[in-house]
Image (cartoon, rainbow, N blue to C red):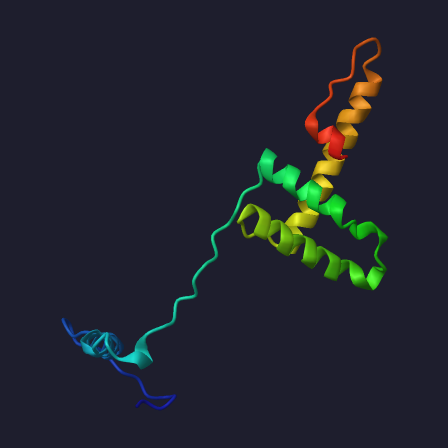
Length: 136
């Protein structure tokens, strides 16, 4: 070890001592067997994501209509949505989070409002009616 005011010099073709130490440690780690449980990291299994589609949207809207979260007290809304999400996931055999269900419901309602406004603004044309409109 060198002191603060000491200097060191390398001769030509001499390798850096720090690199030699790092290479030795890397070689030692490479020789350690992979069977050692202490050196293995546990891998967390990632849950497969599900995607919304028209059929799943209808099931979500039906579940929301059967248990309206809008009539619950403010403190009970989260519990109501947890119940909706669990029943919905069982019915469609998927794994949507509570947040995903709430956000998708909000998106569907916004799309419905835009479509409804566009149909009203289009004077003289008949309203385009979809199956989702019956649920809304």
